[in-house]
Every structure is written in structure tokens, then in C-alpha cells.
Amino acid sequence: MGLTRGDLAHRPAFWLWAAACLLGAWIALRGIGAHAAAFPAGAITGLVLLAPALAAGVWLLRRLHPVRSPPLGYALVAVAWGGLAAFGTALPANAAFQAIVGKTAGPGFNAAWGASIAAPVDEEILKLLGVAVVALMAPAAVRGPLDGWGYGALAGLGFQFAENFLYVLNTIVLTGATHDANAAFFSFGSRVVGGAWWSHWAMTAVGGAGLGCLIGRFSKAHVAAAVGAFVLAMALHSWWDAPVLSGLMLMPVKGAPILLAAVVAYRLARRRYLSHFRRTVHAETAGGVLVPGEGHVLAFRKWRRKEQWGVPVGEARRLLARLRAAELALIEDGLGGLERDPLAAERLRTDIRALRDDLKASGANVRVV
Image (tube, rainbow, N blue to C red; front, side, top):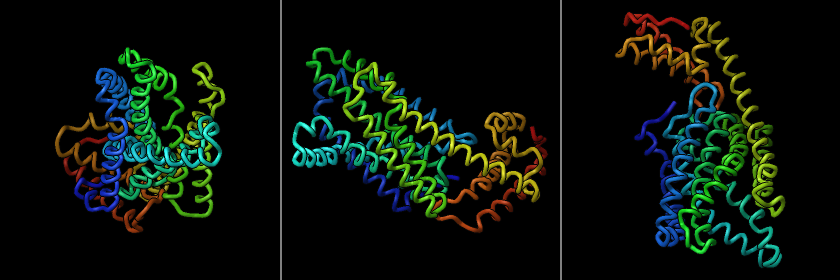
């Protein structure tokens, strides 16, 4: 499913990603670097608190795939895009947009509503570009709405991490810079413990599901789905930033529609993926490529792990891992995606038969659980 590091380096999208992340990091450093240097205790405390939350979020979002987690490298590409490229470039973009709103509607209106107008447009576009970059960098990584949902959520999570760090620094300044560590703990509690459930990851997951649908297969219906999902993501973002239902106590009420939209998008994308999975397993079993019962092993991580434990370490276990990877690639090939190779399925079927013969020749006793 994945490309090697050398393969990625030969794709223009990789260099676009690298350049955008460097640019975003440079802009962010210029904007918040002085505050971080001025309040080192608070900045370090914030990073110590936020880093484990980011790691836990990446682990959880990858585990939400019902069959196999997206490659860690691609997941980190999406996170880096959100936390560096999207976040850094959003700072001047939001400032410029809000300046226009202020000049057009007045400073009072901008102070109240500027964020809910500018941020949904700028930030959702920039974050969603992370899904497109992953798809261009590794076409097999995004084959449908479930992949788009996952990489969108990861890009949003990276943005969320960077924004939370910015809020740590802002809280230190607003509290008079007298209790830096306490300000970091307060910001962490309100932004992560209280607000992480319906933040940027959820908004961009919705937009990412629509974009993944379009990337998987181009059609008028999928264009409409992608546009609708993106508009919904912007609307949810605008709702969150709007000066209504403000205050910590009302945060769950305000955040519930955002979380609900992300959950519904996930459930629909998951059901679509599993429906395709079952149909393909049935067809390939009837065609003799898969053996009866093998689909059950392929569908669950725990059975694949249990199967691995029953095979001696060495060549047999490597062959089994390659066999299962080829079978999963065959199943997912039918989902579509960018740069789809019409001959890939037949090559994978040939590889599966050859790997099965090699596995039998190795003498390994592999049983379908």
C-alpha cells in the first residue's frame, strides 16, 4: 500500500508538502516565537501537556479504521501539514481576511463576528489541502471517504495542536505573565480536556470524507458530496467561532453538532468501506483467489495477529505478512483513487497465488482461524 521514502522524494507533491511545512513553520515562528522565548516555563509546560495528547490522538484516529490502520508515515505527513503548513499560513490569511471585514463592516462587527467569517474559509481550505497532498504524494493512500475522513481528521489534529500551543501563550499574556505554568494548565484543561472532542479534527474529518469520496471516484454525485461536506465543515467551524452560547458550561452544547457530524460522516464512510470489503471478499473467494474463511481473518486485526503468532519467526512469517498485505491491497484496489492502474488487480491476484504456493512450500502450518 505504501511507497518508499525514495519513491516519495520523486513526486512533486512531496516537495510541495516540504516547502509548505517549512514556510508555515517560519511564519509561525515569526508570529509566536518571541512569546515562547519570553515565557519558557509556560511554553515548555504547554508542550509537555500537549505532546502526549497529540500522540494519543494520532493513535486513536489511526485505530478507527475498521480493518487496518493507515501507515504511520502518511499519518504524520497529514499531521505535519495541519500543524505547520496550514497553521502557519492561516495566521496571515486570517489577519488579512479580518482586516477586510473590519474595513467593510466596521471594527465592532469584526471584533464580534470576524473570526466566525474568516477562519472557516481560510482554515478549512488550508487543512483540507492536507488530504489532497497525501493523495497526490501517495495515490493508494486515499481511495474513498473513509481514508479522506481519517487523513482530514489527522490534518485537523495537527492544526489543533499548534493552535492550542498558541492559546497557551495567549493565556499567559492575558493573565499578566505571573503564573506561566498555571496558565498552561488552565489552557490545556479548557482547550484539550474540555474542547478537544469537537475541535478542528472533527470539522476537517467531515470535509475530508467528502474529498475522499471525490478522489476515490469522480462523478457528478461525488462532486456534490465533496462540495456539500466542505460547506458543512465551514458551517460547523463558523458555528463554533460565532459569539453565541459562549462559556465553558455551554461548550458541550455548542460542540455537540460538530462531534455528531463527524461521527455520522465516519459511520457512513465505514459502512461504505465494509460493504465493499464484504462484496470483494465474496467475489474473490468465488474466483478461487481467497480461500473460504480467509475474509474473516483479513477483516480483523486480532485474527491477523493471532495467525502471525502461530507461524515460526523467519521466512514463513514474512511470507504470511506479504500474503495478507497483497490480499488487503487487492480488496482495496476496487475502491478507486488517483492514478488507478487497471492491471493492478490481476497482478495482485498473481502475487497472491505465488505467495500462497511459497508459504505452503516453506512448511508453515497456516490455518484459517
